Length: 119
Image (cartoon, rainbow, N blue to C red; front, top):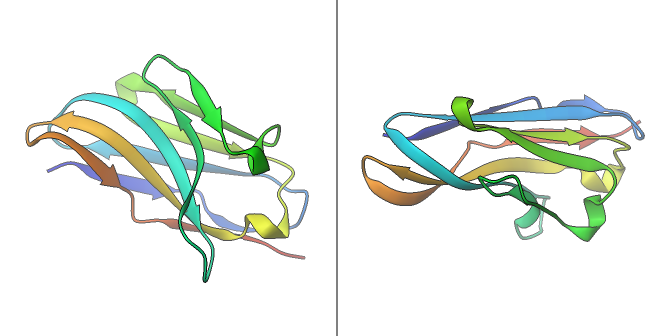
């Protein structure tokens, strides 16, 4: 059974930085696109950034120039470096991975990690 475990959220002041980490484990043969989404209270979940297995990245306009997504394929891990954080970045951040495992190809979600930007 594939599981995704996230870490790295927390409370930070505006202008500060945080790093998020997500690793997959359990019966994995290959991982295609990895991504980070976020969901603020009362809002729909939205894509923050994604990265293909080959390293091609895509960012939402509201994080371009501030956030960086990266991955470590041997570790089945994806990272999100968040700089110049703003109060509007406050949300629960979810890792998402497109995994080919022993149950076939499926989309998996992490448990979510809270990021709060406040003074």
